[in-house]
Image (cartoon, rainbow, N blue to C red; front, side):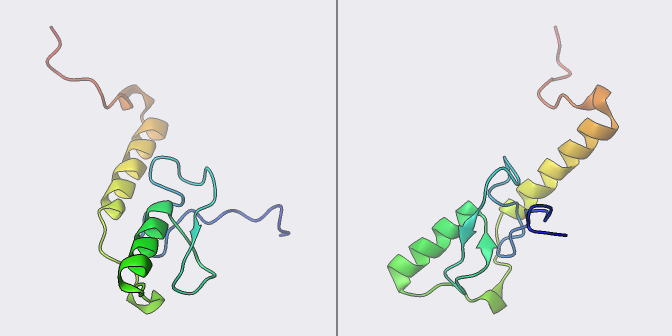
Length: 101
């Protein structure tokens, strides 16, 4: 598999959410972690690391990942909706209510 065929990583190792975010997984690249200057992380984790670095002159080291984050729950919700949408298209509308008049 060459570089053009390589599948992009869409899993953030820092928060276990999607890269670049949970709304558009895999749509564009994420941020480069300040912890090791080589690991791609999601945009929100990139912002959090930047704020840690600015405020405390310190970022959460890689060996303390994953950090506690609600993005993991958002990812699970997104994955559930995608499964329902693809496997059960008749039920994919999550915005409807049963209180139809």
